[in-house]
Each structure stands twice: as structure tokens, then as C-alpha cells.
Image 1 (cartoon, rainbow, N blue to C red):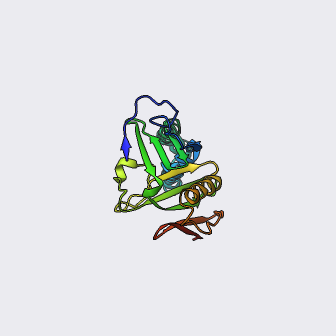
Image 2: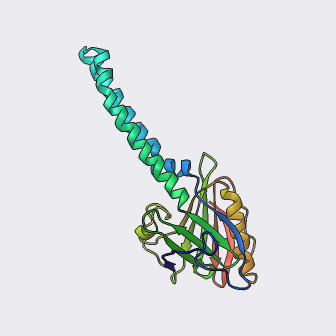
Image 3: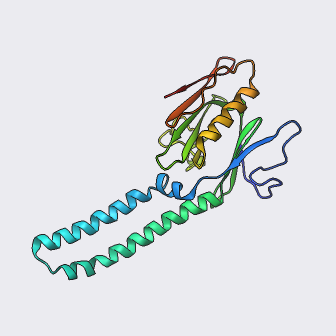
Amino acid sequence: MSDEYEIEPIPGLPAYLPEGESLLWQGAPVWTSVARHVFHAGLVASYFAILIAWRLGSAAWTGDDMMTALASSLWLLVIAAVALGVVALLGYLTQRTTVYSITSRRVVMRFGIALPLTVNLPFACIASADLKANRDGTGDVALTLTGNGKLAYFHLWPHARPWHLKQTQPMLRCLAEPSRVANLLSQALKDAHPDAARNIVRPNQETVTATRGSAGFGTAQAV
């Protein structure tokens, strides 16, 4: 289901779409959200803030000169700035090198900062789709694959659902309009399986799951 790409006739797609298949949506992660939710910029900032507070608190407790303590903490500020800069750069590069595509027949993920790859996920390989909204307005859409579709977690990371190592779930991460994308994907799945699709629920601001029935896509439930 995956391959390297060198030339893209259509940005984000490894080849022209076959006759009868149409491109419904394309997008990329929001880099600030990637830095925050994937590379944990908040935790990095908190870590260095605790170190600096500990250094100043220790100086105050032992009666050391506060100006000296502040001066000795400058190196921590420099390291913190460099670390956060690296995190921001990773988020930016992730956005620049990623294109998510939804067609009338499949989901295509093109990504990779160092090793560019394209992953094709036909609707027949997708068992369910889960939407999780973040507080900053972005959100993730995770895809559970059927037994016929298996991918390695580290092959997909960071475009994989965290901690799902045994059953890897490809994930469209940090989308600017997650509900719109989930709605579009749900409708595309329904259109691809009109006989099996029933009552697909619109995603709410929390989480939605679109499940696959025995003969195709079935109902969706908010969880």
C-alpha cells in the first residue's frame, strides 16, 4: 500500500487518477498544531521552565545572590530557545512535506521529511474512521484498517495514532477543519458502499466513529 515518490503529476498523488475516480479534498497538517501535539512543544517549554524555577528557588532558599542566579540561568534559556526552535522547525517541515488526499475511492497520504513515501489506502482496506478534536480547533482523523491492510507503526510515524503499535492506525494529523474532513470522508465511504452504508452521523466537537458492517460501512457513533 505504500511506495516512494519522485515525480508527482498531481501534487500529493503518485500518478494521475484513473478514469472514474475524482479528487475530493487535499490538505496538510497545521504546523503549529504539529509542534504542540506531535512534538510536544508545551512539555518542552514546561521542562525548561521548571529547571529555571528550580534554579532560582534554590538560590533564594540558600540565600545566594539572585542576580548571579539569573545570570547562571541564561544558558538554560538559550538551550530552551534552541529546543523549541527545533520543535517548531520539525512542525513546519512536517507541514511542508505532507499532503493528505481523499478521492472517491481511497485515502492517499504523502509524507516524509528525510524519506518521502506515499501510502494508498483504498476504501476496501478501511474498517473505521475516528475523529478527535483538539482544543485549538484542529483535529485528527484515525483510520482503522481491515485484516487485509497492515502497515508498520514506525513506517508511518508521526502519521499514525499514538500508542497503537500492534494494530497501526494511519492518521490524518492536526487538520485545520477536522469536522469538515470527517464529514467528507464519511460521505465518500457511504457513496462507495451505497448498499451497506446507513445513517452516518455527523462528527461532533469531540469524537466520532464510523464503523464498517459485515457487508460494508455501517453506522457511526459518537464516543
